Image (cartoon, helix red, strand yellow):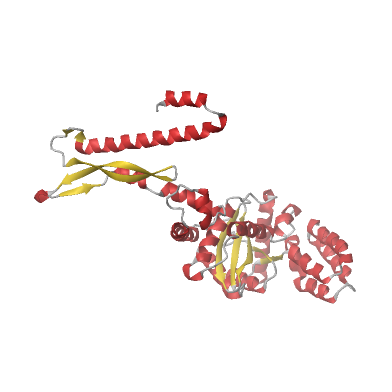
Length: 408
């Protein structure tokens, strides 16, 4: 059926049938074109049909059943056979390059991987691609083991050396019982955010966090020359210990969102509104003096309310206002006074791996799934809100570094 026939048929068909008719015709055209390409290669090797090229090493040997991949589905074809003369009167089969290309599963595998990354389980691939010859659970599993290992290798091989790293965020994520991952996210002076790496362990302990930080340093991650590193974390001692061991003396900013949640757990509900207003004031004020006044107002409020709440606030100390003490614009407070950036990333990451129920460490499954999830999450990153003021943060971190050096 040529283009005129299909156009006539489309004009006579019902609207609901148009797509199916056109797709069938396109598949037929692709099949017809493929057979013509097979013949073109055969003719280049052997000469025209019934007129073999003089002195040619190859000759036609009939045809044989074969199959090709067309739009993610397997189609049966008759493939030409070509043989080559060898020394001693022997012959050998010649594999046509065009036939090899038509069987190449790269496009099919890419479709299956895209579905897998979008959250489609291995068992449901056959419902998404019912005509695919590789949609079985075992086929998808083998594909994922191979491609997941490649993705992990590429992720860990990425060059993370930059001259303008300013902030690092570390956070732990529980995958299963006795299976945790510590994830690292960094912010550069141009406002871009990057997922750097992760480390798997039985818990969010110092050994796991230190292994992650040391690998980051080995790969070239370091604060901007002459600056201290701003480390935003949730207060976990393991994360503090690891960052301090690798980068000597970072500026630690405690997450205000975590602290507010901790205080709320210890207070009666009738006090939540007033506390939320005081925490909001703490987030909005600018400069060291106003920040200390806001922090003192929060301490005063907790007096007589709850001893554990007072102790929790005192434990954090001025790490709650470390960013304020740098005298930077409060436009940076939205994203650097809490770990919301990395927590939102982890939330998005969970959307990619939510169907995983068995984390088989013996097959390196956790690392493969985390690599895929973090890579996909990073694709949606935008610049940090208020990134225009990040040079002011760099200047403040440089002053802090100089003051520390002078004191030493």
